[in-house]
Length: 89
Image (cartoon, rainbow, N blue to C red):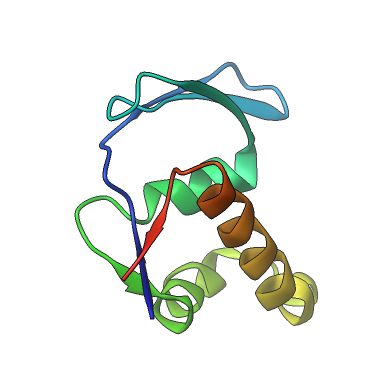
């Protein structure tokens, strides 16, 4: 199963712990964690499986955090799906 985003969207990061995301597809605005916004940005123009996403972002994660990475990513993917920001193929 692959995950994809229907919207290019716009991000506003005020260097705080949250990022404002405007979904141009629905017209909705969402407040995301920095990590959730980072994950959303990985889907720019291409659908990804969870494993492909993990391979793409794991080099950016500190080695001590890699063990918890999959659980965190899956949780965020499910939340983004529930917000209708990501679709499943």
